[in-house]
Length: 139
Image (cartoon, rainbow, N blue to C red):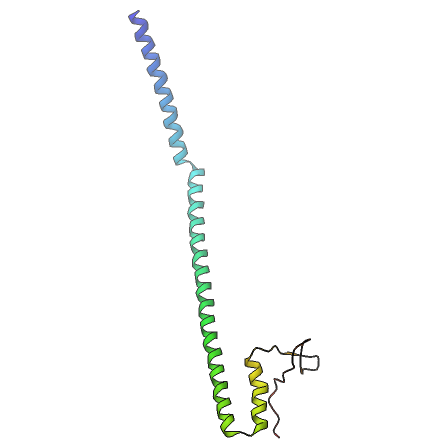
């Protein structure tokens, strides 16, 4: 009986060793396989591309933020120029000149839309006033 126990114990140990060797071989194969290495390379490439895309998006956002700031400054400068012209015109110019300034520049700065007709002349859309955007002719 002792011999059967020893033989059974040996068979159990051999079976356990075969199972452990199989699991160890499977694990080594998975971690060193070409496919696994390729997957890691692709994951790294994807991470790099995502970082590049995020940097690009950030650059685009910064560009448009700066553009909006510059545009607001430019619009403010035009508004200041108009106010300067209007004040000077009030003091120095006659009534027709003041009216032309108010009519042309004032409406343009007030965001009244302008479009040209087929003859190259400004034409108003339905319900809008027409604005002449060409410089005034000398009187």
